[in-house]
Image 1: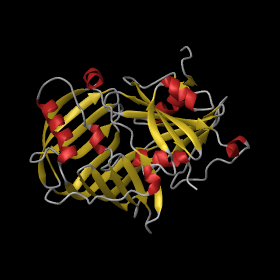
Image 2: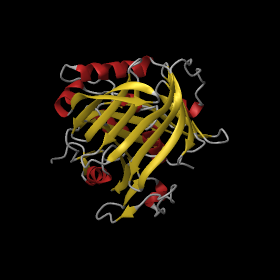
Image 3: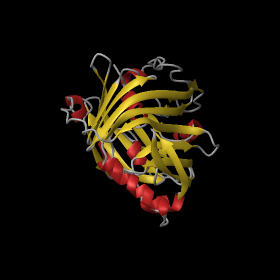
Image 4: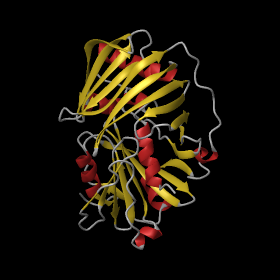
Length: 347
């Protein structure tokens, strides 16, 4: 049986292609100029343009670079992805509105989740990021205009289709210049109809994993039977955005979201399961590389998690299981996890 944290890591991984790619440029604000115009066009195109094609992605993980290819069909708020290669080969992923689910090679439901609100902040973008135009390029045999964004997390490079404004290539590099993620459309057909509307499986509607609601810190504390934690340290430029409570058959977990105006960072926590309290063994290896442990000091061991891409770390802090999912180097995620402390406590 897949654990709740595997579902969350899978969701972070699925954002690499088609599902979360729109969040990269949605809601951009900043100094007036051509780069801002391009960004707004790209944001609008991601909401309105229908496209189908093949996408190549590269994601840097603690175990090295992971490459995938997939057929992607998106339009009118719906996305259908069929992975052709990589760790998720033969898996199909669907998004309809804020619901996401995945099916295995034989059609079995594999993972399901609900997307949180975008919540990108123009004020933070203007404070943390600087955008400029950077020339022209050809992607998927189509002419594009390129703009870049530079901020505390490194640099973002986006190539938007001249005719539609749709972003056909997105590359993110870290502060050290290494490519963190890359998404490039190898082919793109803008003449197709949108994906058909689908009936989401009951689990994706919340019947298995419960429902999610935005709450205040006080409501989050009242919803759980453990001491709620928050990071004492965040990467440069990040601020708190919102609290969410997920209620389901296996209990309640709390999601705290942070952003630098462009990139999300998620902190998930729930009470440690009874099996873990009685010395349950660490999860078995998940794909190539699997979870990795290191000395935990006063807390539990640090686990490095991965799905089809995307970085996350997991750790026991007292009787609470904490998962941190976000961009950048895994060392930053570890430092966030190490800094967890009771909500409202002094620095």
